[in-house]
Length: 164
View 1 (cartoon, one colour):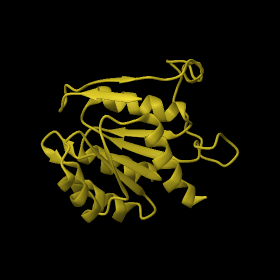
View 2 (tube, one colour):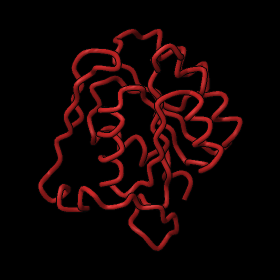
View 3 (cartoon, rainbow, N blue to C red):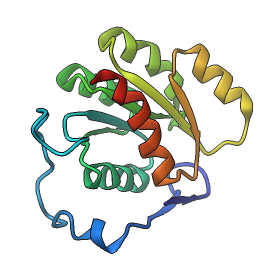
């Protein structure tokens, strides 16, 4: 489970993983970059994670890499667009608040640059208007923080499974 307390760049988070998951990859190992169909189920899918909270960004990156995804990370809109242009990810997990930027502004541009991309928007703000705005911007899904690791992976699985 990913647990976040507070809001903004100083958000504290923790990732709880099973002992087996912790043994999956040494902490200092290089990230996987293979994306062919002969590897683990998720390794063929690239996920762009965009969040200005570096601790949460690192936790999400670690969680998704342990689950076999190839993960690209960005802390702002410019970085997100650069990563999308360079790597053509299959999915993006975008925070609504990115410092002074609005994460919802990047969703239509990601869809334009990578037409196949599945965009999931996340926020710690419990306001249903964000969900409405996310879907209006072209998001495929919406998640509230704190994120549950199982729910996040199931959301990615159900949407990326359509790309097989």
